[in-house]
Length: 438
Image (cartoon, rainbow, N blue to C red; front, side):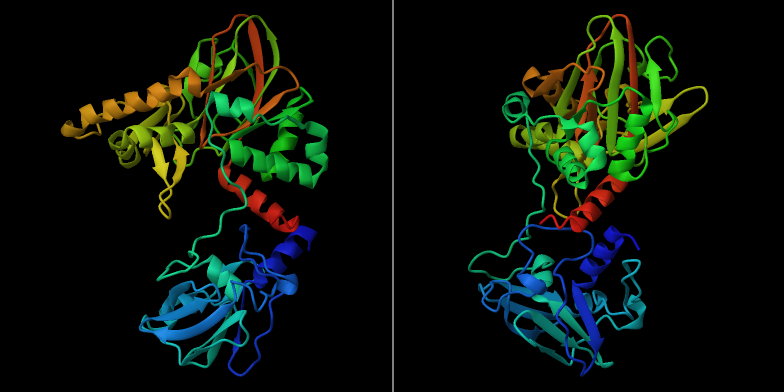
């Protein structure tokens, strides 16, 4: 078993312990859950909350269809009985080797009710079920995953994720510019690789300097970040120039490219894109980036009607050639269904399909909203311009950042690849646990 797999296994087991009735509750070794790390959720040594910690449980009682918990800081939350039973992670209910549930919801009644709840130490909640099953929840884990608050003296809030997004326009990103990462250090150091991943998530992009101009270098970075590159109709890794139109795409020409995201015609667009200009004999060819999340938030503030329309209206996109016709639909601004935050931008005017899907009464509002959003992406105050040169690799988040290019003369040679977003974030979370990044 690899070191990373071993650490993840231990960390996952520490979230909840469950045992048969009358068997003492053992203190979990760590207080983290699954593959996600949050700020503010780690406890003192050995994974135990201090008896005086605000994460410690003060009282626990049954309250209708839920268990009511009061923490030391006065915060109160309720957990449904069926939710507590569903989240049992004993050996019978959860496979810690695969991190998957074994429990089947059909095996218990929906109105299941504990016969007793207790606090065997302020750090744990013990729940005894009618079939003699007993589940022990760590207080910090419950606090982290609380989905209800009744009242609080200090505010019961979801802990912040380890990384906060930095939304930017031209001025703010230029005054908070981060130095390029070094290729050799990134491929040889887990800490540097983790920091690179953090930067991509935080800003939506990052640069890696001293990158060799052979396509093997792009492949090596993609493997480090996600395990492998994403195979598409463009291939797994690209080497192309504007002298040959290899695909039916404006990006393969020397024309000006407005800001856009890629793969809008995929049901799940690539999470990352890497671009490396390995040679240019000519003029022009400047690259631009726009923070789509910043633009969307600005639209939300300035024109809420247009923002709401673009988050709720499904738009068709396509890629069409003689050999392939890809289609996908989605809102231009996609919201996280759990917390309502902006989670993805799907915006590419080049790939937008014939808009015969709109209701008659919605057409005028759609174009008003589309123009408002597009105008923000075209505003120079929201655009970061720079020149890609041999040795400077650009890695950008395709779910967030729009990229464009000025027109150019001469031959311009490029390398690159796509990376699946789920693979990238999955590797990032696992690496965070392995490196104990709190």
